[in-house]
Length: 156
Ligand SMILES: Nc1ncnc2c1ncn2[C@@H]1O[C@H](COP(=O)(O)OP(=O)(O)OP(=O)(O)O)[C@@H](O)[C@H]1O
Ligand SMILES: [Mg+2]
Image 1 (cartoon, rainbow, N blue to C red):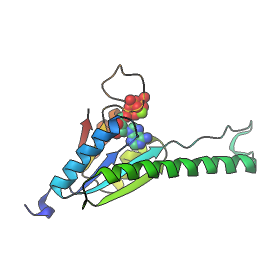
Image 2 (cartoon, rainbow, N blue to C red):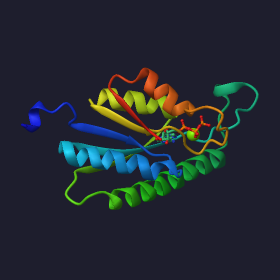
Image 3 (cartoon, protein in one colour):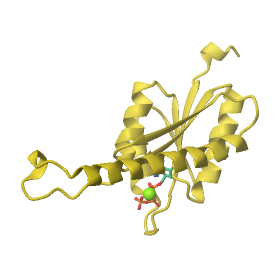
């Protein structure tokens, strides 16, 4: 089959670094190999929010606090890139793998990123780090599978 005719050309694999991520990356990698698809490993973090002083946004933030927040964001970014790189190393050689770290609301960021960049499949774990295991799906896998513009593979 011609690569152009394949339904899956770009795969977005969402990783939170929990025990579920190993299997999620494995399924994403396997499909990418079989479909000869490009694969992107994405991690999203919610930036730490500063406590706003009374008066709200118009009150200027102390420079030290802004600097601290930026430093924390930078540190999370670096750590996330490192762990995504570990997963990248675990994938088959020869795959075209991209690594993306984004900040924002987790599920919304994944949904928007997937749609704007024309992914054909999103791979998520059924659960992640959350410790309330009453439900089959976590909040991210639940929302992503409900609202994605493309098919979603939920790995359990
Ligand atoms: N920060 C994240 N970045 C990228 N993907 C994520 C992130 N958090 C979750 N995911 C994806 O969603 C899957 C399910 O995680 P989810 O967060 O929905 O479950 P949970 O942590 O068990 O529950 P909750 O977070 O709602 O308490 C993960 O295996 C991963 O594929
Ligand atoms: Mg979670």
